[in-house]
Image (cartoon, rainbow, N blue to C red; front, side, top):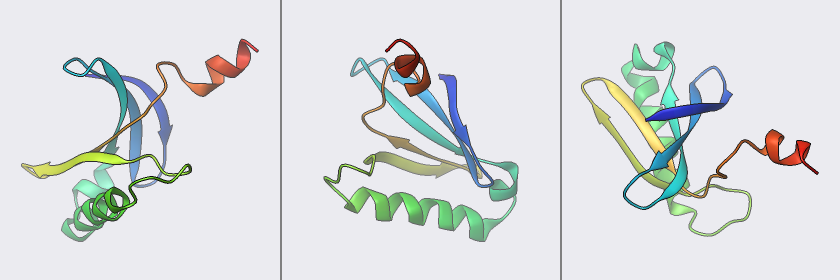
Length: 93
């Protein structure tokens, strides 16, 4: 289930999601209609996920743990997301 919008750009929106099976938070990047309407852009979206998945342990990269395409919709799931947006955490300091 998509919960909080973390960010958005030309090619996608990133939402914080809760993984009920593993009891953790992740980020789901969902492509925009622009990407969904273009087979080449959908391919680039998945290519990005494959490239990021190969970066196993870097402090500036959130690891991709799942990506896929089903009936014209693509998405990727990233690991290690905070339970609240960083702005909320920083506001409390």
